[in-house]
Length: 330
Image (cartoon, rainbow, N blue to C red; front, side):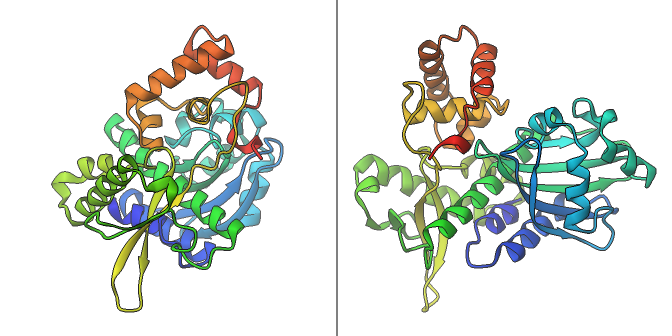
């Protein structure tokens, strides 16, 4: 699965090529012989989910972007909220109220029993949906679900960084990078946000973890994925930059997609609540942000106190009802 992470963080190709590469990389692990498809989307409007780049192989039941868009338009907004906006890995058949969705009926009519979906989503409500057609009943084991949920965090992170680079019109991953490192973790250059001893140590450790993941064997797959976090200190993503002489560097790009705060929360408190509103577990949030689970719990506790929420459920409800999302941030 390391190949999926590498594809997710490739920034030197168009969105269409990037999507195809990511879908194919995921497909080598989830293909069930009946077709693969994937697309990027914007789910900020529950009534009108916008489908962007689309790719499908010759076996897929959904062959065009327009076909996907038409099916989503028939989907209930509440279903969109519970799936596109939150589920990182699932079987379509196990999603809530699936029997009432027109697309599911059509899929079964074509002889497809199910879809295994990897959904790179985050609180911006922009994401990457990848599906493999499943011709017969299957179960998604908890270990596999947890592993793919972590992989999906990287797909979301890579897609978020692509959008950020496009917005800033960066000519390369080096332009605007807050630090540049060698693969062994040596910091070659660091701007003020990344120049402290703590920041340099965190970036160095992350670079070494990525290097170990890339050179490790299959026996260490789970450990490798676990070490390669979705973010570093809830701020940075490390991406490759190849120089003309063939040397490879890692550029630390800011990729948290958040500015300011809301309801008196700090940025970090705001982030963890935003991810919590997706229904993600404490462990997954910690992985997505690259911070310790204990830190997530402390931040959630502080946020709950400030927002007057007495439980995790109340905090989720309050955040959702208040449209508490990174998507609403300036």
